[in-house]
Image 1: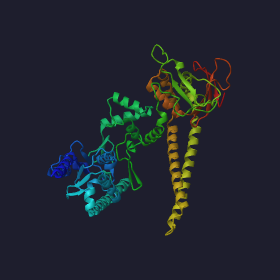
Image 2: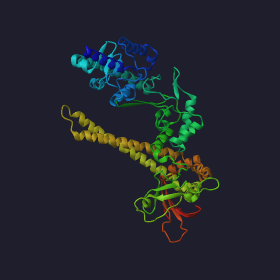
Image 3: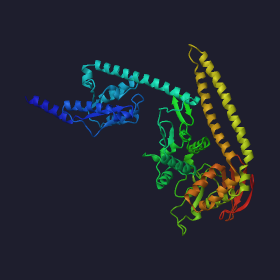
Image 4: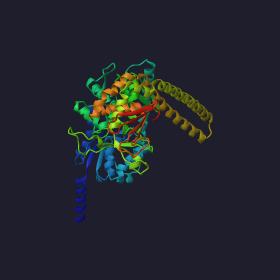
Length: 553
């Protein structure tokens, strides 16, 4: 009798500690407003009630609009969180997970779906499929192993249904894309997410004005050189919000890569890409998109850091003339300041990495960045100097030749790939030579790389054709006062001009031929993108020009 009571008490304790969870999933968010969610929840409530168990409402597992076929409910949904909690031991053994059917848990390939079910069961958790009343746990499967076979058959059927549906949907989308490109269809294509600044009005997409305005401001600030943190702050100060997300700055950087800014919807179906031009209203044109993506590719070295962003440092542009090492900036913020609260000129320094790290540079010391900034700003503000520096006609001709050469390489590489492909197709029934496969992959990589180079040159061509020297010189001139006064916005715009203008700036901090005198000039070699090298000798205290000539001093 005593042993019998002990067994009852143990069973009671287990019953009291049993936690019942429900998992709801539907692939279409619209089902949330319909009967699907209510039906699935009632299954779980009825199962728990019939057994006198409370349904745990603290952990609500609900995946709305997440596909079990593409495993989005695991990668980014509640089920993935639940599986992670099991792995971490946060779901106690003896718990119960109630689902409507096994197809709610997964519609992936059967072997993958079976592994996910096994992970749950092996953790001591019972899976209940309330629609047919089946229970899956270690004890039951050991007693009735055919239930495992049944679960596999259910998963096979669920995967095949989803796979067939996916193929039909893809075929329909492919037809619509081809019709759009051919100009015979101008309706909506429901695949992927549409940009939040555009909405479908029943006939076409139209701009959501307040959101489109926020995106335009963000684009303009990014073009002037704002990094992610400053950009977010500037938008908040204007009362604008582009995204409602935690990682705001990362989302902004992704935004600047998106082709839908130029009205292009991009779809990829089984490795084939469709670009639907004029699908959305444009916020920028194709040229601006190419420039934006080029700028975004170099954002890590474009953004100015700290309270006083450098205009010539941090761009992989400034190098030491003595040893060839990079030259970096240092702002000594803790030093005494001027009456207006700004740093003394001598407290913003240029330091050669070759001297500070490893002692590779033979010329010690550093210099103030202020005279160098003054000299470059003054030089580029003069239209005559800027024209000689840039060498526009030569640059345009050089770019044109480079573009023709890149396109010629693409044609040649594609011809080689076609020959390799023909050889592969001709080898019927035999084992495909590995060397052919490697060669095909090598050629595909070379084509992709050359196309990227072609796009870069095209951006440079557009920049060169749009560059008007008086306007550019005026842009430099307008930034001089604000930049030297350490105005953040002015310095960021000047920074962008430096990046657009110079391929390389070489600095000799004690002159090309260092002497023993205390007052030594600073020599600069300015190398513009595609232009002619220009040498400047400047006063190390004032930045005033002492001499300057083409090629060298």
